[in-house]
Length: 151
Image (cartoon, rainbow, N blue to C red):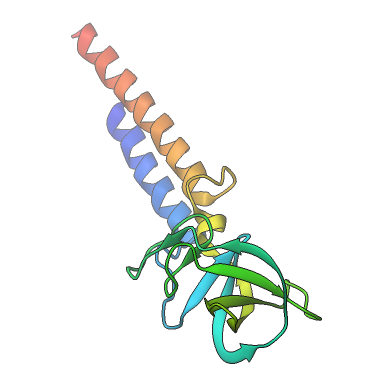
């Protein structure tokens, strides 16, 4: 198989993978949110009076769209604390400390996209596609340089 044919097959394969596995590369930031334990929690206007215990804090803040790891927020600064709410499971909602003694409710909206499609997730289409692309380029390179030596 010559290198041009391999390259054409590779391009078709990459296009096919992107059609089958469309990937959202940016977060939807039409609302304020925090990420805790791999889940997105949307900030509400509801105040929380009875918190239970501290469960984490913001480890990364950014107001620029993208995908980030850790306990990320597009609203609250690094160090802002998360609390569980008395009588409500963390699968439903958590409390965000705005000031000492003042907490606001954040409701769970689902899994954070960075965890699902990030390059650190070895089962993600991005990771698998990247590995396949590297293998394809290695085959093309070996084939190309092998043919050059024979000339």
